[in-house]
Length: 54
Image (cartoon, rainbow, N blue to C red; front, top):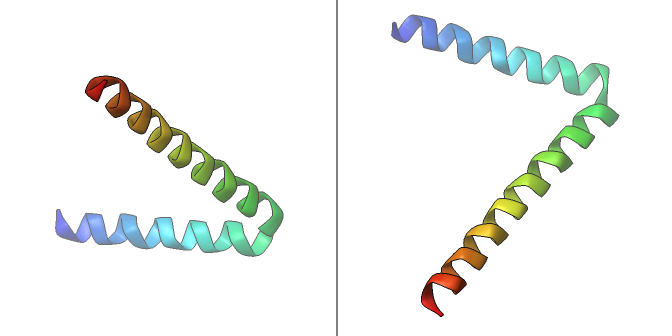
């Protein structure tokens, strides 16, 4: 099972590198979308905590 996880991790790394090399503009867009999603989630948690305390 551990061997399968290692292989899957290597495949994901190779895929990410391939995507970055072949299409850096698209890869940058995907990273930006990911960070915007994380930012929105953190803002939502902050608003929830503020409402919870108030």
